[in-house]
Every structure is written in structure tokens, then in C-alpha cells.
Length: 138
Image (cartoon, rainbow, N blue to C red; front, side, top):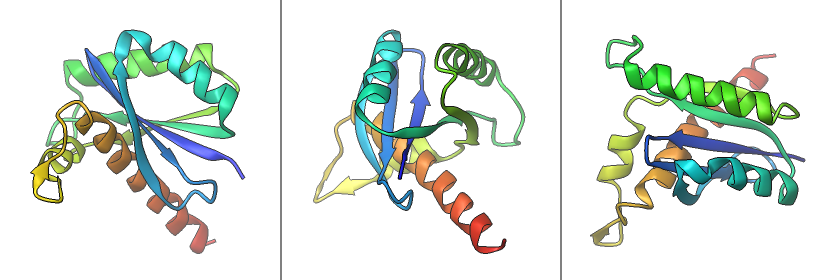
């Protein structure tokens, strides 16, 4: 089976998460400089069986688009054009960064840089849960 990638694209840093082969569980993978994202995706597509890439869509709390939303959508569209052999999805990421910031592993907070990858895992897990629920209703 193929895997799904999750991206939390920011101006400076992008968190990357990956699903297991069954598409049930997301795990944080790494955080990379957003400027290096193309090369990272290329490498992941060569080394993993990835069918879909889910990009966190940073909507406002009211569900509307902000300037950041537009930047992320533009970036996602550029990536989708370059890497057109995989499916691309936008996924509402409201609260994923806050969840990642509040997460404690053991007693110390997670590394600030790894937080982006954890946020990507929250985004991806939401998408995977939704897809599984959809499949169960068919």
C-alpha cells in the first residue's frame, strides 16, 4: 500500500509527517527549511510509496482566508504542478500548531523546530481519520 505525506508549510520552516502503509497512523517525520522543500519532496517520492500529499490550510478562526492562507495555497499549487504524479489535498489546519505547542513528551516540551513536524502529523491524522470514516460509510 502507499503512504500519505502531510505538510505544514510556513514562511521559513515546513513540518513533514508521513503515514504508515495502511493509512491509519500519522507520525512526525522532520522539519525542513521551506526553501528546501522541493528537494525533500523529490527525495521522499523516490524513496517512499506516496500516493497523496496533504497540505495544511491555515484558515482564520472564522474559517476565512488570510494572507498566509493565500501564500500556502500558492505554494501548494506550485508543488502540485511540479509533482503532478501524486494527489494533492488541502486540509484545514486550525489548531494543529497550538496542539503541537502544548504537547509534552515526557516532562519537557518538544523541540521548537520539531513542533512543525508534529503539527504536520496532527494535520495528516485529521485527514486520515476523515478518509477512514468516509470509507466506513460506503
